[in-house]
Length: 284
Image 1 (cartoon, rainbow, N blue to C red):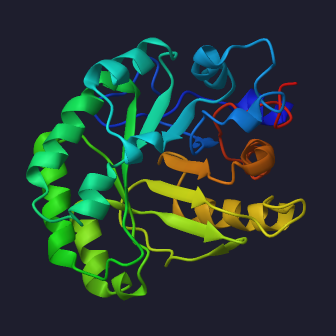
Image 2 (image 1 turned 180 degrees about the horizontal axis):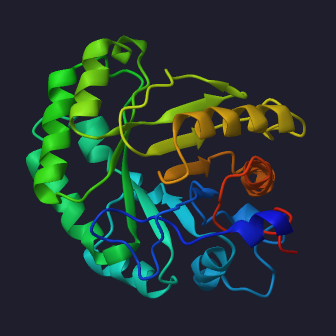
């Protein structure tokens, strides 16, 4: 993992929000989906670090996080501003769009919730990364409705990067692909049990990948071969000057920490730059 750390570069951030020191060669931005897991105490968080300081500790080990808590309750702009103040200048926080927009409204009438979300998220300033729209499994394809939602987010923030994770098979059509590409929105490549559960479409000049659950032991870990296959897919799809965000959602038993570290090591061995990760997948 020392090799991965030696190759680490500052993250790409978003267009219009690039931190000082931004370089044209940008890395795989590797992190986890969330950071506030009590079962990570003693596995990732040292026992003497209070929970109120967990974000600072996390940001010292990783350069990016996917904030899935914003899905359940949209925080105030002041909360986002607080996260900005507590993280270093090279840190990037992706946010999961509010379930009010994706699951309650089901993308209908998106202007007001999209504007409210982006106004609050503006508190992150340059720390703001992509917006993830994870669609309900029961929401069948409606490309026109998706296009309206993407346009509403862009109207609220023209610099926003948007990743979309459909979960109903009816979305896998040329029309869906065209809508995403027309808005430079990334199809979220999702993994379950070491295999893709989405088409491997490139719909934007950047990438977004979520690792939900591996098939290795102990559960829900990923094996080296599965991670190596994903490194190959991602490296083939995007050159080293395109940001690719990779988040591990298998938080149980601290698997996301170990797997993100292993993934970063394999990516580094394959010649890709990567952001910082814990040296051995743990800190205690």
